[in-house]
Length: 299
Image (cartoon, rainbow, N blue to C red; front, side):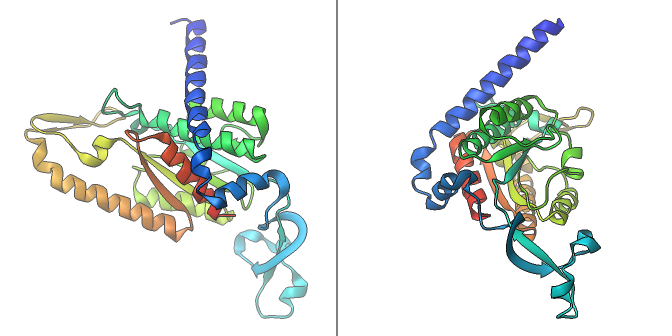
């Protein structure tokens, strides 16, 4: 295929996913009316929030952590105790919300033509959230894809393009380049081992960042509807597994699936994050509303 043809396909995909994401966001106002905290968050927009950040108004003292460094120590307050303290100030500007859509091979899986691949649904949900956030004056940025956080139409345009077409590299969450106290929305199927995600969330915790884990799954991954002779292939290629009677593995599979989900939920609670699980056979609006509710609780 020519370069021009590839570019046209990329442009069409960006437009399609953005329109789908904006459609999901457009249908939310009636749902948002039921969530006062969410409506209040949107109404505040750029008018500021009472949370620790880089403003000049004193907010609170907290205990010093090794990653803060000596320059962050408030020596006057620390002199009154045998512990070291850091002075935290109020965040007086719109926060930046950092978005990331997993681009791994497993995210491209779909079990039916009736619903899209997980990677596209994750992009749609993220774009919808970006649309709502930028409408409220918030700044958005895509992890590993854009260095400057922006709001308004330009912010939405840039975030949409990167969420639709960006690689979504694991490096973006393994060595995240974000500001302290930021909020993060990670969209993935979270099929990597729990130990892998524990290490990743610990790096966000070191920067005092919290957020939401949007777990996007295909219905077949949860239900395991297979029967008879079935071959399962690794999404990255190579390994495969052949079952003569796939239904005999259903009970054990569902148990392992439930255990993995429970461990993800425990991990999210441990780091103060929110886990939202969304199936691709259900409306995107339900996931976007859940994301917004979770972001509102962090204010």
